Length: 131
Image (tube, rainbow, N blue to C red; front, top):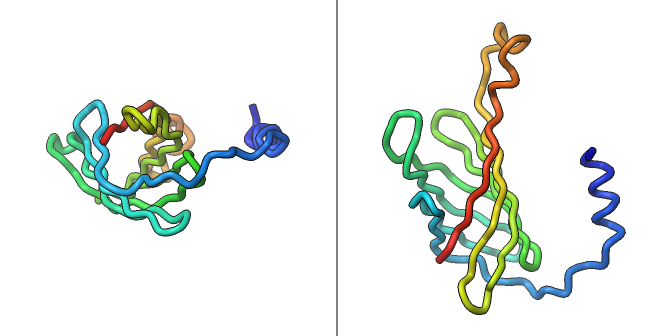
Protein backbone atom coordinates (compact mmCIF):
# COMPACT_ATOMS: atom_id res chain seq x y z
CA UNK A 1 0.00 0.00 0.00
CA UNK A 2 1.31 3.41 -0.84
CA UNK A 3 2.28 5.52 2.16
CA UNK A 4 -0.09 8.30 1.09
CA UNK A 5 -3.05 5.92 0.92
CA UNK A 6 -2.21 4.44 4.32
CA UNK A 7 -1.90 7.94 5.79
CA UNK A 8 -5.31 8.83 4.36
CA UNK A 9 -6.80 5.72 5.96
CA UNK A 10 -5.17 6.58 9.29
CA UNK A 11 -6.50 10.15 9.17
CA UNK A 12 -10.03 8.81 8.67
CA UNK A 13 -9.83 6.83 11.92
CA UNK A 14 -10.82 8.43 15.20
CA UNK A 15 -7.88 9.72 17.23
CA UNK A 16 -6.57 7.49 19.98
CA UNK A 17 -8.05 8.15 23.38
CA UNK A 18 -4.78 7.03 24.97
CA UNK A 19 -3.19 9.55 27.31
CA UNK A 20 0.48 10.37 26.81
CA UNK A 21 2.38 7.42 28.29
CA UNK A 22 5.82 7.63 29.86
CA UNK A 23 8.39 5.96 27.64
CA UNK A 24 11.29 7.37 29.71
CA UNK A 25 13.90 5.00 31.08
CA UNK A 26 15.77 1.88 30.04
CA UNK A 27 14.29 -0.62 27.59
CA UNK A 28 15.88 -3.93 26.52
CA UNK A 29 14.98 -5.94 23.42
CA UNK A 30 14.91 -9.71 22.92
CA UNK A 31 18.55 -9.66 21.73
CA UNK A 32 19.82 -7.85 24.84
CA UNK A 33 20.29 -4.47 23.15
CA UNK A 34 19.53 -1.48 25.40
CA UNK A 35 18.08 1.96 24.89
CA UNK A 36 17.79 4.77 27.39
CA UNK A 37 15.00 7.20 26.55
CA UNK A 38 14.28 10.72 27.80
CA UNK A 39 10.93 12.27 26.85
CA UNK A 40 10.07 15.97 26.76
CA UNK A 41 6.57 16.61 25.43
CA UNK A 42 6.41 14.53 22.25
CA UNK A 43 10.20 14.58 21.68
CA UNK A 44 12.33 11.53 22.50
CA UNK A 45 16.11 11.54 22.84
CA UNK A 46 18.55 9.01 24.15
CA UNK A 47 21.20 6.42 23.38
CA UNK A 48 20.86 2.97 21.90
CA UNK A 49 23.46 0.25 22.40
CA UNK A 50 23.17 -2.67 20.04
CA UNK A 51 24.58 -5.85 21.52
CA UNK A 52 26.04 -6.76 18.13
CA UNK A 53 27.48 -4.93 15.15
CA UNK A 54 29.27 -5.58 11.88
CA UNK A 55 32.52 -5.33 13.85
CA UNK A 56 31.35 -8.12 16.16
CA UNK A 57 30.92 -6.24 19.42
CA UNK A 58 28.46 -3.73 20.81
CA UNK A 59 27.96 -0.33 19.19
CA UNK A 60 26.20 2.79 20.49
CA UNK A 61 24.48 5.63 18.69
CA UNK A 62 22.38 8.69 19.52
CA UNK A 63 18.61 8.31 19.30
CA UNK A 64 15.93 10.87 18.33
CA UNK A 65 12.21 10.38 17.91
CA UNK A 66 8.62 11.13 18.87
CA UNK A 67 5.86 9.80 21.09
CA UNK A 68 2.12 10.37 20.81
CA UNK A 69 -0.15 8.54 23.26
CA UNK A 70 1.07 4.95 23.18
CA UNK A 71 2.83 5.29 19.79
CA UNK A 72 6.58 5.78 19.41
CA UNK A 73 9.05 6.26 16.56
CA UNK A 74 12.79 6.77 16.80
CA UNK A 75 15.93 6.72 14.69
CA UNK A 76 19.48 5.78 15.66
CA UNK A 77 22.52 7.08 13.78
CA UNK A 78 25.27 4.47 14.02
CA UNK A 79 28.99 5.38 14.08
CA UNK A 80 29.34 3.71 10.66
CA UNK A 81 26.85 6.17 9.15
CA UNK A 82 24.09 3.58 8.86
CA UNK A 83 20.69 4.38 10.38
CA UNK A 84 17.92 2.31 11.91
CA UNK A 85 14.35 3.59 12.32
CA UNK A 86 11.79 1.91 14.57
CA UNK A 87 8.02 2.51 14.79
CA UNK A 88 5.80 0.83 17.33
CA UNK A 89 3.24 0.84 20.06
CA UNK A 90 3.32 0.29 23.81
CA UNK A 91 1.13 -2.66 24.83
CA UNK A 92 0.26 -4.27 28.17
CA UNK A 93 1.28 -1.00 29.82
CA UNK A 94 -0.43 -1.83 33.14
CA UNK A 95 1.05 -5.31 33.63
CA UNK A 96 4.16 -5.89 31.52
CA UNK A 97 5.01 -2.79 29.46
CA UNK A 98 6.23 -3.89 26.04
CA UNK A 99 7.02 -1.77 23.00
CA UNK A 100 6.33 -3.82 19.86
CA UNK A 101 8.14 -2.37 16.86
CA UNK A 102 9.09 -2.85 13.25
CA UNK A 103 12.45 -1.50 12.07
CA UNK A 104 14.35 -0.65 8.90
CA UNK A 105 18.15 -0.44 8.81
CA UNK A 106 19.68 1.39 5.87
CA UNK A 107 23.33 1.17 4.87
CA UNK A 108 25.20 3.08 2.19
CA UNK A 109 25.84 1.57 -1.22
CA UNK A 110 28.63 3.21 -3.20
CA UNK A 111 27.30 5.44 -5.99
CA UNK A 112 28.92 3.34 -8.70
CA UNK A 113 27.23 0.19 -7.32
CA UNK A 114 23.74 1.62 -6.81
CA UNK A 115 22.32 0.47 -10.16
CA UNK A 116 22.95 -3.19 -9.31
CA UNK A 117 23.12 -3.26 -5.51
CA UNK A 118 20.78 -0.61 -4.07
CA UNK A 119 18.33 -3.35 -3.08
CA UNK A 120 20.95 -4.69 -0.64
CA UNK A 121 20.95 -1.48 1.43
CA UNK A 122 17.74 -1.97 3.46
CA UNK A 123 17.16 -4.59 6.14
CA UNK A 124 13.81 -5.03 7.92
CA UNK A 125 12.78 -6.74 11.13
CA UNK A 126 10.84 -6.55 14.40
CA UNK A 127 11.84 -5.94 18.01
CA UNK A 128 10.06 -6.12 21.34
CA UNK A 129 11.37 -3.96 24.18
CA UNK A 130 10.61 -4.42 27.88
CA UNK A 131 11.69 -2.45 30.94
